[in-house]
Length: 330
Image (cartoon, rainbow, N blue to C red; front, side, top):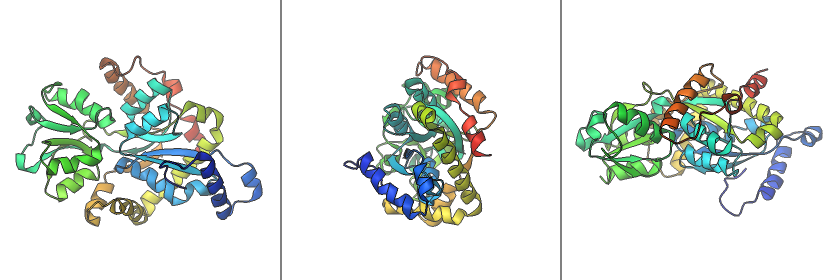
């Protein structure tokens, strides 16, 4: 398994990962009935780290699934890759999923986690800002088009009396925001873990609010419609892998933390283990298909429709597919 980074072809991946399956000890009969390889997209902020752990846990291989990974800064970019059919599976919050369904018919096969506690509105510490209203006239770093960006612009800011134009939206990826705050090129940021914990620990930023009280933010595992239609058995085996990974998060948190902490330190992030542990604790990993998901998604879709970001409310019988998770739990 390799990260996609130019010059690595799907054919080459299949050849290499076939050897990996043999090494994992699968028999010839199992190889003959091999499941479809999965091109997995994920974001490198904390929302994507459960997926990162999945890819390194060995659970996909255990269930007979080969995989290729595509890492990007945020989930809305994964969604765009899926609309372009460059990726088969990917996670992002509800608003991005709804936009992806409108543009490319993407299908929700599970809720992987809830991340409302991971998302904060933060301001530079030296400005002593404590309220959303105080962002009026300020430069606010926002990953435009992302779910957290849409929720701030469409829901949170208006509820605090701020309309578009009352603040200057500075477009950037979430992983660039802490540096921008430190350089004082922006006054505030809308970002996710671990970047807000890093800003806080380094004395760069302070929290105005987190998203939990406004939106618990279920993170959807989406798939392309062609993939679920052609490879339903792979989808079920894939979700079984997730159920095993969820047990690791609950029963072996230190093992999980070691893997994910290693990712960030390998990328050059200077973060203490204590700071990281606090950031990881804000992610609630519990793969399933909550009974209230449809109502939540309906509310998000109505907001997006009002803002003219989608042409119509989705047909939820096509967009939400709980049947795969039901089979995975059997």
